[in-house]
Image 1: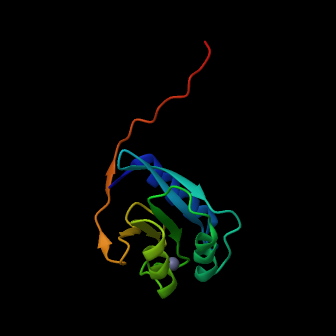
Image 2: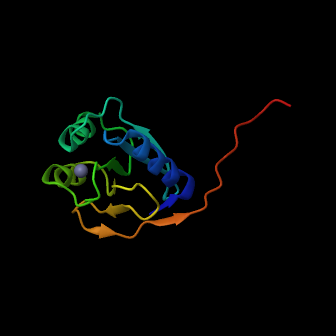
Length: 129
Ligand code: ZN
């Protein structure tokens, strides 16, 4: 599994602009590359609440989850681990200061895994010229 650099940039931007509130989202992929994030609306100020919002989403097609932490600690909480086990196989936690080094990817068991960042060519929307 890989992630498009633009998608990662988007995640970091949203995490930063949401802080100290947390943001949570679902990850979608094309050909094993994560290219899209569905943001969960109304994510609340505590970790448990952001994660609970993810739990309550219907089973839409997703490869995993992403959420931010208000501090620099990116270790999954017990609630996070329960979520990882149930919703997909790739899980990103972003922490302060929300830059290119302040995120960690976990598998469904909560073990850190390597998520390669790649340049992905997004399909342009058709325009009428
Ligand atoms: Zn968490």
